[in-house]
Length: 189
Image 1 (cartoon, one colour):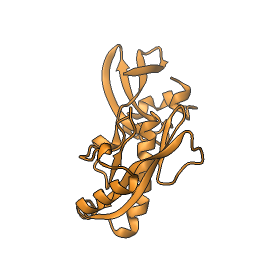
Image 2 (image 1 turned 60 degrees about the vertical axis):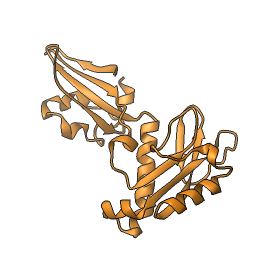
Image 3 (image 1 turned 120 degrees about the vertical axis):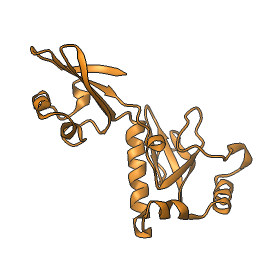
């Protein structure tokens, strides 16, 4: 869905940006698995655990550890104040934050993705960072029109800086003039 137009020019070219609903937990293969309970939101990955089966987060952790071949398990916390942010460390605001589940890496997934153990923490943090970008609605797409006809459309650009999010690499160089002086898509939509 389009949320705004960037520019119209005399030659009938229009570039339209939109916030992309690209959920990296659904559309990418991840090394980690997130088991979350935070109604009314459906955060993390699909799973077969039920919050009502556990009295504490530690009980859930034990269930995960006993049913899956887990190599690394960390608590997952949320800070929810006008937007949602998640982390493996707790936040300092107890009234707007708390634990929502666990994030972990299984032996099977590590082998499938050929990830060495010394990279587990780094990959876990990068996947959380990517998911936070999605939760902050900071993933964009664009439609390019010429004379009213849609000639190109693409989404999944992470971050709102078109110079660093891959957008300029994707589009034809003739459209780069539209991006001169633009460091943030959110400033022009």
